[in-house]
Length: 408
Image 1 (cartoon, rainbow, N blue to C red):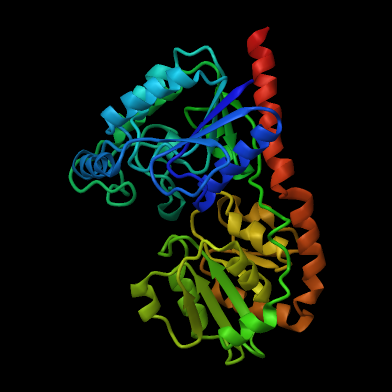
Image 2 (tube, rainbow, N blue to C red):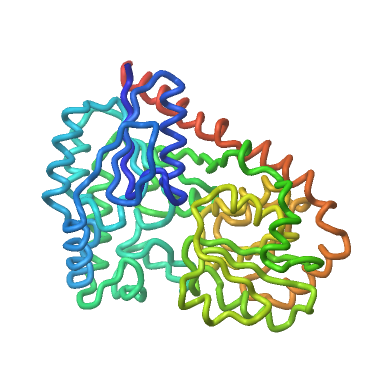
């Protein structure tokens, strides 16, 4: 039986954890033995799981990052132990996801996997793999990653360093280590990210873009919309919805607040994923909801919304767009990264970042046509392009193709 080992910071929670879980399920259905390794953030998995390190390792990793800007170069003991576990598993494929997140030492890991005679697949969920520090650079318009990072303008952003700027050395080490694996296949989850990878020091590797998928059997138009409208006092209101795991400037929180100042009394904004401090500062016409892990709650909210608004300033391929589409809700997104790739002319709108006046006009346009004008075509697009069963089976085809080439 072929064995798959996936490595990610979380297991079966948040977007990357759910993606790894669904890939594992697809592998199991194809007769594979599936393992998922993770550091924190766990929900019961159908794959066998391996926990990397403990809370102390994470705290130590955070401390080193803050002092020395050596993110993903700490966790030495945890990584050494994990490598021994890989030896015991003897995987046929190692599939990497997010290696940042304060839990693993990528230098030790790549020194190890570069000596293995097996295919390595790396799904790129952001830009961290080819920068000297950050996971995204669009918000500040930085192009240093193209030639060599130095004097990082986002040193105080994730992964935050309070003292040193090691961005140049990080860039050089990543370039050397990540290119040391000859059988590495990179999988961007958007064509936008694919184009960036082709401009980076990773350009010589095989690249295959695979879109993320969602469970279109669970993300469907809800029949509970009347109850949800009553619960949140949204009766007779046009509802604009925003969803994020964490909110801040990068997700455009300030723009939703600006929008709230110009919409009419019959329009309400609902934001999901806010923290306690953010909830206290909302205007009266913005309804704030804390993060929920309940798919049922999200489905109800997506279905209640007349328009899904994504004011993201940096993003790869947001899953929330796909979830909204599957629930029959049109999307309005900023012209950001791969966020635009989920939208067609029939299913939504694309506007320049920060163009609140244009957002206001589109809201009125959708009001005139009515949500029903968009619902069926939105649902059809989700079924055609973003069904996780179809999309994640692309990974299984990739695994088998790589193994066939390796055996020849």
